[in-house]
Image (tube, rainbow, N blue to C red; front, side):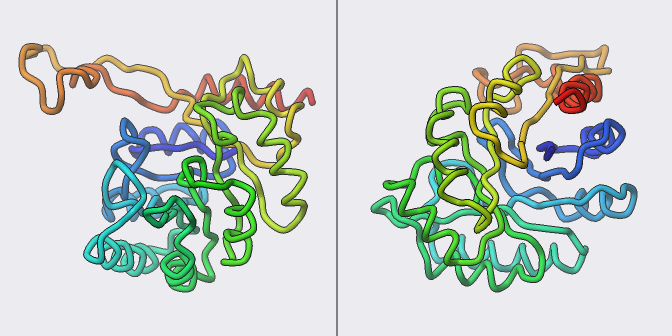
Length: 244
């Protein structure tokens, strides 16, 4: 069970609930971006849980400029100094195919740490060809919703990927997993690893509030509604797992 987190509080809750690993990101509202080095270092110093770091310089597509690619390499070099346990990234070409040259360069830079190809896989042009490309590049796993908006919608594809991958690479379903649908997803694809956020909403401790002013888009959640990882939700899923 991998839990995606964007704060120390969430990482601590994930460890307390018995998660096997965390994926550390920032900007989860856009699917996750590279987190701060300080946060990664703090989590590694305070907790025992393995930490995989997202390497994604911005939201949006997965076609990166030369400058963005250089930033990704610099980030990996700095995070390696903090002894993070793995990296999560994915780069596509403009035609939707896997950018084998750039991904290979990053994989080589990350090793011996573990590497996950993230949900850029879900928007590439050909999932089955991408599977073979990603395996050939030396990735350890693929995070995917089955090339649909959620794992439930992508369940047939997830099952196909797990079967085709065999023991060559780990297929890790992620996207829309909850306590209510987990068993259906697990029984439908028989994957070995699963990724979810287990998020809940925590009210801000601020009593002075300017609800008419937004730090981001007014379409985004209020600054006074904070998303955190819920230990209770992870506990529920672990209870389900223990019965299977």
